[in-house]
Length: 301
Image (cartoon, rainbow, N blue to C red):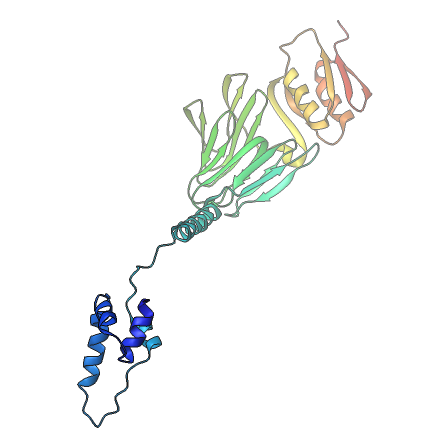
């Protein structure tokens, strides 16, 4: 006979001797007997009623312990891990702010600490805004003027070196074979190939094709901010290269003396005037073939 049928007959006191013996072998028999005995301890004037089979059955301890759903557990752990990973990524991911300039274009950039960057043409600047409060660091390709708010260390990272300050005004040029840092206020530290150079106000560090030179400047800010390119004792070939950059042209230089050096400036908004500024001091000639091609030559050739 089934267990449930035995219990129901036991509750009705209808078990045969054989069925009683079978009932006594049940694991729940002692528990059921205890319920009856406890009920009989009440006084006779109390209403005694035997609980129904359904209520007793619901109170019986389960023979099988609940099984763990490991798939559900693993899913919950994975969900917690993914959420945690997402939170970590959100707060630590690199949030890149990037700026680019094209020909005859400049940009004024305000950094999170209110430092100001004037980005010259054909330049690229980027920084991570998520980590800025912990590390004032940015990357530069090209040329930019910096007006840095006082605070913790401020790093400008270029392919040729790292410029570090706490709060100052300085200009960085990192283009092709030219690396130049000029200090206009405060103190600038330049790390070039693990060599540290400190530049006070009015000093410049120029490294051109690996040749290092430290010079002075009386300017209060770089001339390119006023749409001018200024040079002091610079090879004419390098001046012409800057002319190409400023006007997005190709210039052909044919001169007898390749060691000619230029001190002066040219405007960045008028090609004809710029060419006159470069050629007149050396009695050179020039011709503008079209908007993208210029020839400069020595008539003695």
